[in-house]
Structure formats: C-alpha cells, structure tokens
Length: 105
Image (cartoon, rainbow, N blue to C red; front, side, top):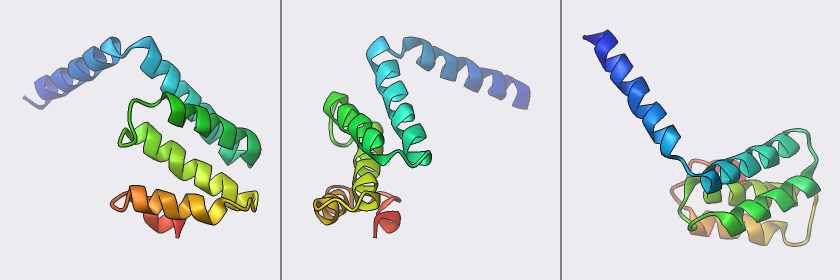
C-alpha cells in the first residue's frame, strides 16, 4: 500500500510539473539565479534579479514574490542602502505571517 501511495504521489507531482508553463519555469529560474547571487554575496546583481522576479510574479502573495521581496530587502541591508530599513519594514507589513519575518528583524 505504501508503495502504491508513493507511486501515486510521484505521478501527481510529475503531472503538475509537466503542466508548469514556460513562464513559471522562467520565473523560478530567475528566482534561483537571484538566490545563487545572494549566496555568493553579489548583492547588487541579486537585488536586480529579485526586482525582475517581483515584476514578473503573478501577484504579491505568490511564494516566489514573497521570497524575492525578502531577498531584495536583505540585499539592500547588506549593501547598506538608504532604502534598506523601508524595504524590510514593507516586507514585514506585507507578509506578517511569513516565516522570514523573524529573519528580517
């Protein structure tokens, strides 16, 4: 029974991935590129990538948008930009239930 459930779960996940449009794959790729730049501490380029993701995301509640907004704010903090505090406060205000709020504080 467990094997059948595992196979069903795998099949369902592959079906969903197969239906994922080019636009969404591109959005995910852009986000992942931004995270890679962020992890390499290339904050300026990462912030640009996250801005691009935020502009392309379907809405402000989409998980990719939330992640991009958080990372963009953190890039600004690490770059010591004048808008850093405002970006962090905006992120917290926009997504008070996000697990990343604690990291942003």
